[in-house]
Image (cartoon, rainbow, N blue to C red; front, side, top):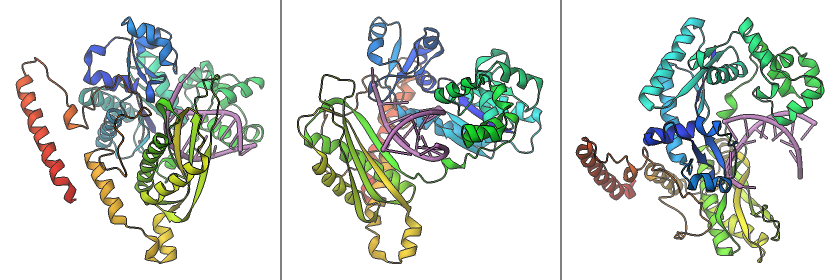
Length: 448
DNA sequence: TGGGAGCGT
DNA sequence: ACGCTCC
């Protein structure tokens, strides 16, 4: 049996843990740069505000206090996600995080009743120890577990835990009334193509001949149909494999055409990409950088240049990548455009260990100690504590995040304030002590 | 008016 | 290279 544990309105729920006044109110969390709504509370869904609504369209509602809109706080959500995974591991040995708010758990050798009980136990624990509402779907395949989770969320009588057997009448009834595009892996386009063939429900897809599906659509769709029948054929191990390319890109808080500012933004993305590269123990052979103007401004000239810089030898050294960035910007920059976004991609990645073993020459290995030290300090003290080159104070290109909550669980300076509650004095003392500890750690750290 | 990734054609 | 899919 496979379980899928999925948090309800994860980002909003994380915000509510630390700000209970948001409970039972319409709350939305915005994307990076406060661009659009990417998470909604049930109350906001009830107002029929769709996913992805541009924030500026909601400005009026927000000003009148009818809705709350928060900037996204990924540091907080990431930490809550890690805690959720840990709670699951305490209850079950085989946990595979699929996304920030979804985790698969593998329950081999458990009876249906035991699976049901375990689902109820983890749900209760996560609510109690973490304050997060989650639902649990249990089924023989990933696709059915996803579906079971969907049902646990929508039909209240399941009380957050739904177990679906592959061949039960309940499962059949559910599949018959489920639109095919609600099935995992079926998006808008595939659903349209299926509708042409008269396939509109999950049940109809399940009844299709996989060989036909493979011929007329794709191998992915054939697998999905098999999964709906209870034949497990999706592997989740892709998540543990090292990435084949690494990208870091961000929109700007404010458009800019100033070369030095573009360079600064690209440098930051290059440094973050290099960190990700070293984390998965790869080397890159090519660096691609790009800029784009604001495609929503039809009145302004559009330009999306990119430059590809092959490296002389594979590297994970931030300084080598930064040099490629400098060269690439020289190649692609043209004055007279207002750019809105910059990004860096590392392509053609190779495994660091294998590459070095196959060449047996230490000269290709560039100063690992420096990079390791930088990574260790940033890991411990927070991203960007040590950076290459000058820091730009309050550059206009930096992300907008006007309504971000505190990073309550990952920053000493942003811990919860206890206010006037009777526990306030003790809490304030604890916070003071923790800040002193943080300062001491900051002083001690450079020796690392 | 988001960011990041993989797969299939 | 591009389109589709996921979250």
